[in-house]
Amino acid sequence: MVEITDKINSKIRTITNRIPISDKFLVTGGPLLLLEILFFLGPVLIMFYIAVIQMENLQLVHEFSLGNYVEVFTGSANQEAFKTTAFLSMLTTFTAAVVAYPFAYFIARRGGRFRNQLLILVMIPFWTNYIVRVYGWQVILGSEGIFNSLFIWLGVIDEPIGWLLNTNFSIWLGLTYLWLPFMILPLYSSLEKIDETLIEAAYDLGATRRAVFKRIILPLSIPGLVGGTIFVFIFSMGAYIVPSMIGGGQLFVGTRIAHEFGIGGDWAQGAALGSVLMLVVAGTLWSLMGYTDMEEMF
Amino acid sequence: MSHDTETTGQRAGENATQSRMDRFLSTAATIGERYWLPVWTVLVFAFLYAPIVILILFSFEQGTFSSLPWDGFTTRWYSEMLNDDRLVQATFNSLQVAANVTVAATILGTLGAIALVRGQFKRKGLFRAIIIAPMTIPGLILGIALLIWFNVIGMNTSLMTVMLGQLVFVTPFVVITVSARLRGFDPELEEAARDLGASKWQTYRRVTLPLLMPGIVSGSLFAFTLSFDDFLIAFFTSGVENTLPIFIWSKVQHGTDPVINAISTMVLLFSITLIIISELIRR
Image (cartoon, rainbow over all chains, first blue to last red; front, side):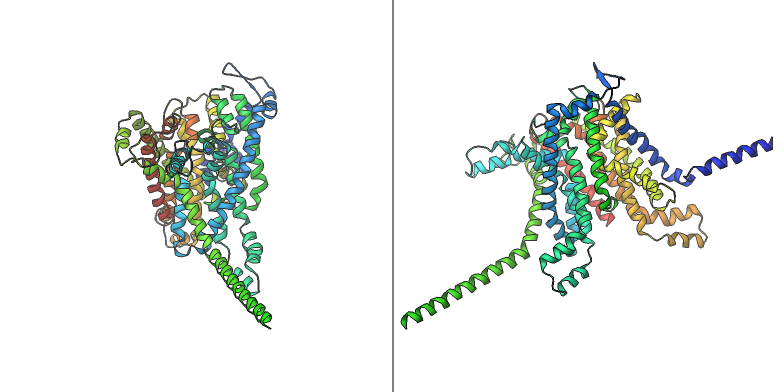
């Protein structure tokens, strides 16, 4: 009897020894890992599966077909949506970088003793409710909004400017506005780390301001620039709130997906659109992640 | 002779103008170089705060349309806001969800940070990737994926599913905040405590935890804000229940309304307070 228990015990020991995780990890990292497997990896994988089956009369039918993917690439609304989304996302990423760079540089290198206070001022819009902030732009840009009413009152214009709201312009403005802090914060953290003595040494050796920027500051800020680009591009590609609230009826990937899960009632088609979007996200991360350190950004 | 003097004089005059012009241009350039960065910074701040300031100002404006010129001061929209039962219910739901998510995310996230920084195991890179990925994928994708998932595993969508869904992306933020703190302190402090005879538990309670506290508190405040402000996960996984962002969303669909300005102002001030406290603790 004792022999058998010993045997079983040693068997168990060999099995547990073979699992590369310690029991300590099971207590600390285990619960979080389980959460992410159950409610992150699971859902994302099931989305890829749903994309290759069908939805008929609001019921999922387990019939394999690539038809939904074909529709993603050939349907005219989807094609149009992907084109607009990709174009506006690239434009937004570029604009955010151009706007954020001098700003982050100023706070990081010239902020002096107010640096932390200025940084908190950046964090505030970053963490406050995004629906409320996008709604704020609706109030500003509408045909009876703040901007138009102010300039009509001042006599600068006679009629409200119509293209301020519910156009590609307002989507571009809204996305740039919403994701700007995601560009500022990584840029700040890499600009702040640059050693002042490097810059001084370059000046001592006779470098011009332009040369110092081009050969020292810019190369050393690449991790921040890449980090910001990753966030702004990915979040713009997957945006739903901005195109839906201030984008009028412009075709956008996010609104197409939400449509399929709402009134459209075709989850399988929505999942296919979501899967393609997910692949774009993964591809962006995969190709750019090596140039930056994601953990240091927050 | 006279012709000569005239040209010389003229040339001298030209030279003077030239050099004055040069000096002016170079001062302008220096001033420009010195001041364009601060001016740019102020403009970007103005851009970041424009909608926030406008909403707060116009929540006190009398006119039904939020437009200029200013019609007069009123607190009417705030009293109308307080009489809306659906709003009160939605706010209560949001607070309840956020409180639960905060507690769970703080515990899971702190433990996860310990595993991430101190743990020695194979495939740590994979563990890190699984923690970071939920923060980088768009909320829309996570929202629809969770909707499908809950449907497939047969879980009815309610506030419970909202909490589970929010935990997925909120917990990583706590992990990052706490692990930054954990990396910053010397493990020798713990070893010293053990050498002086403290038990493992005593060391945790008297040394590790107090040192981690600022990270844990600011992480939990972030968790609360993230959950309280989340729209996308709640939108897809809340079923018939309303949270505050969903309520605001449905109200916004009918166009601008000064009552929304009042609600927005309350939401903004609430989050701003939490963030300032959190940042002051963290830095």
